[in-house]
View: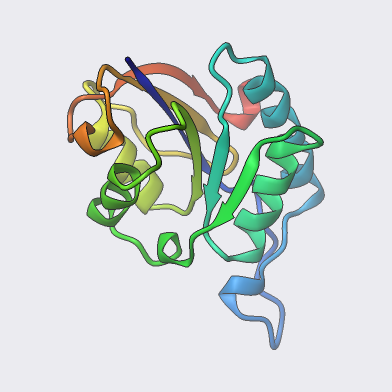
Length: 161
């Protein structure tokens, strides 16, 4: 059996306003538009995600909701994603429920880019806002996902959505 992991950097955000924390930053109109375009890509994908994990930041939560749209994709807030290092994201992935064969993770840079490069069999590069990459893993369980074992099957940036 194989597993599909979509890694997504949250969509474009506004600068922090006076009195606002980093967690509170909101998506810009362009960010909302880009996330809606990503939704279309995800739902048209042959192995669209059954679950979307996201940090508890406003921008990742909003991105995840736009990605799910009106589908039955389950959204799960994981506060640990917010300040995670790449190794922490790997641990989160390795603990996923094996009943789900396709999962998306919405996170933050530089971690999401570093994690993508850690798990990939090839160099992926850096994620701009609203970038999606998907990886195929030929494993039976999420716990078997290891660095350097993900085959890149999709990489889209917002300017080419």
